[in-house]
Image (cartoon, rainbow, N blue to C red; front, side, top):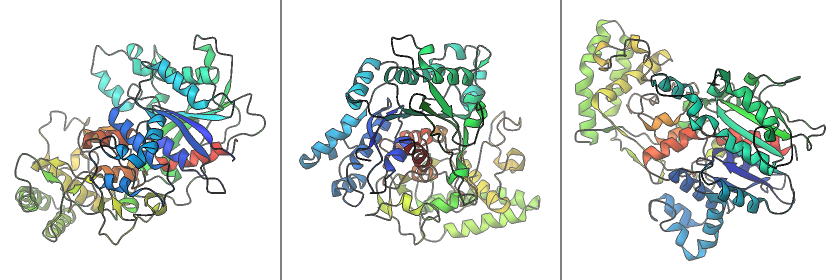
Length: 514
């Protein structure tokens, strides 16, 4: 390619889709795609997006040391404080802030459309639109929550129609190719009793049929990326199971690939190739990260008080396990307690540290590692938990190690049952969920920001939930991809993202259309 294909990234989040596309290189080692504009409304995600736009301007082995100074916490809490104001870096900072914009589709459309026009320029070169309209109104979790709200109406929830903002851009600017990602729940969500996916597919095939505009008629063919289809694809054909493609996570998402019909002659897109590895497991990709302990909330928090609290609170649980002849789990807990008394553990840190582990990820090593700082670790600090939850986490991870599954409510010792009226109802039977070491993780969702109950680390001796960096590894973000904001904001960003390693595989398919 003489010049990279331009990308417009809408609803960009922290930039997972964009990272995959912008990481693809041609035979000469040059970027095949280049992000011309990315739009994100949430401020911390926008700052993460802008920091990555800054980083991408440099060859991987020539990134300025000031970038790493920022990662080490020496230049403020976000790049706008000091990093972007360093005189010799200001031109790169300006480029980054020109590329990434903190704006809201549906609210700032005039400005966004002006920026898209400017980014694309006057020529009529092929370009690609990517993005995933926010999905809370389609998600299974969101719909389950809304069932309990008698005032909720999907028909009046603006989030049900955010894809129309994406559609307006397609209608007005007519990308050569678009990639739209959303949750699995989109396949079953209904508006006025009709499945919304049917309307979405119809609208995307002929955008001007839904959007009142003076735009010229243009039609798209929508392709599945996961299944060879003869004839018209079924909605379920658009479902991608990430674990089939080398992602260490059972993330199931709807991804639509649209190609403009006047551009599509005989060349049709390929489908994703399944990974030769049957699975990439949690252990495969986080085994090298520094061991850290959880924090104690509502009381003094030191390594000594943490160990003491666990030892005091675990006694009735061990007695109950032994009385019910669950000796293997009790023994695993005892071994973990002994391991806790070894080298004191810290709670990690948000800012960059160098891993002292001699291990390396068994899979995706080259993808994760920074070529200049191979042991760089950031966003790897733990949250605090009350004593009861520490013991529940310890039990869950010990159970998972022995049984290779997460325990449901019926497997919990009575002494660990939370004081929750629905605990025994079956509705919350998997409220505490350990990520099994030798399997892909469950879907990393933004709910990880609420609490760590669904995301318990597999090592009982750490008795904790996953850190942001561990969640980012499961989402396949490179280790030098720094998430700006407080820990809650970081978790939300990671949970909402598209795995970049899946995105680069999609980018390879799209690149063959040009």
